[in-house]
Image (spheres, rainbow, N blue to C red):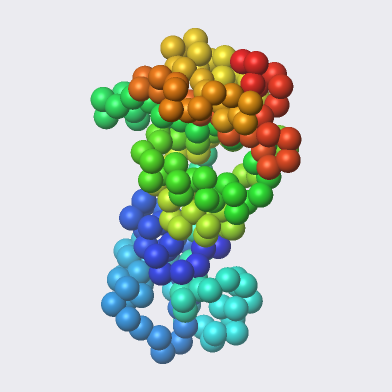
Length: 205
């Protein structure tokens, strides 16, 4: 997976992600890039100094003169998210995404969820976007710090969560105002896809 930008790469390093290779613009240096280079050396990553045209070919985005190749994104299990909340003595907060297909939207949701203190995000393996280079970039590094689970069946996951006494809420224009709901306990919030919203069975659950 290719990531670009000083902040994004720094976040990946802070999260302990494995850097496979680092590409840096020839002759370019500043304190942040130098610290990235040192961190890459510690991780035994290959470091290559290249022309700007080479960096431009690696990524069409603003690379800030440094690009990194990291290990592919590692998904978590839902149980890990619950254990994380329990270990912190916090009420569980999970975000369940029902059919988000736009990587920009997933990246934005990951960023917002991480800021809000969510313990994890659950996405579907089918008819939904996974964590891609674009998602990582749009999340502004948040994807390196929050757990993401990819499950086969969203509805089965919801049933399992309910069996663990986790309240499930769904964002729906036909529902009541969120301010009227008791959302103080362990909960998971379902957000529907861009086109069809939350599926009928999921909303029923």
